[in-house]
Image (cartoon, rainbow, N blue to C red; front, side, top):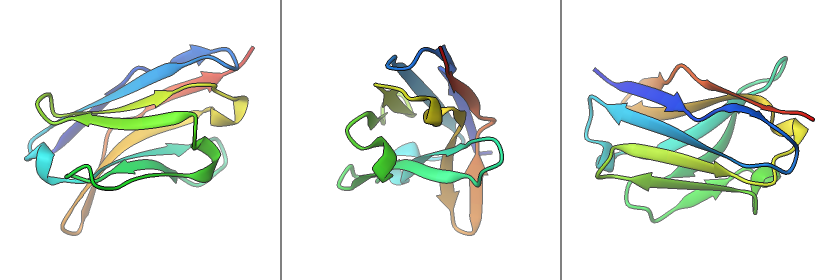
Length: 116
């Protein structure tokens, strides 16, 4: 079955960096678009970045452009989110996502807290 396991979150000061990882299993990773979402307290879950299966298209939400980079390693079945110049408003639980047919799969999430 599909499994997504995020890691790499933590507490970081403003201006700091973190790299999130999402290890995928149970499907042919290279065939699917992969996405990172986040959900801050009291807010809806929002799409942060996505990476198509062929690497042709990468998108970022405006608030993270120039600071976050999504990448994938198909040999390791892993998608990454490099986050630089972190701001307090980046504080959220970050989730990895893959959609297959009519099903949305999510990991358990990893907490990112940006605070001094």
